[in-house]
Image 1 (cartoon, rainbow, N blue to C red):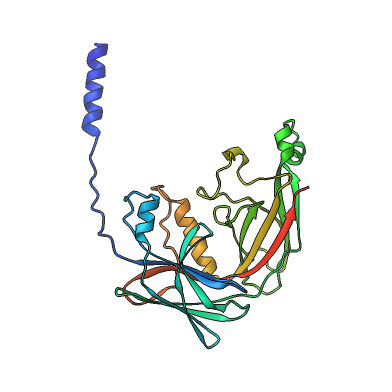
Image 2 (image 1 turned 45 degrees about the horizontal axis):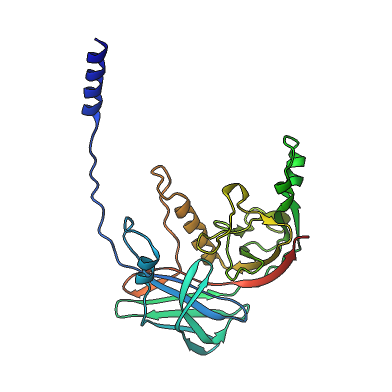
Length: 301
């Protein structure tokens, strides 16, 4: 009877299974834009094509999506800069166009125009007024463990540090910042997931935050584990890039972070990634943003 019962339950369970077939919409072709300009720096622009969601992702595939032969110009202050083909890793992106004439200035507006046989795209951005930090300091993980009072800190806890910053927000609302960091001999700036800040809740106030160490997978080959993610180490020389951005630039990173964070979750709220790219012909998406950048150096002693 026991075996018969198990067999019947198995048949019932199998009969309850239902194969669901989804008719996925056809892919619509877009040109994906990621461009920025900073004070005293030329413009950088990455142009690529989108790809189907379930296509494999590897270095060769990503390289094949890059768009070459486009006419990319940046206009500002009555000067038109035609960007040249270039390959430069910055902020986890391979930029394949670089300016040679216009260097960014705080308070100036810059217009981007992209032309290929399939698309004509435009976007505008401004380099906002820089928003300085008040101070930087650190605390070891051992300090935090002692403060919690639940565990005895280890030797490794004394070697790992959290970097803190203090920021006084101006009284006028509508300030936005994106932060980057790098340590020791690292060449690339990295970020911690989606390190953007808005003064929506702290307008006119002085606030303290932790600036976690970023870790882009292809940039670092050290032995950092999940348990140590976000920490710097005693002896590190840390460089911080603290960059004010305008609202369209902020909304792009905010919605991109929300979309990325919900990837693969069937219960996540669908997110449309914001863009300031205007398509005069064809379709485009992405961001053209100005950074009001200030740089700081901090040595962990």
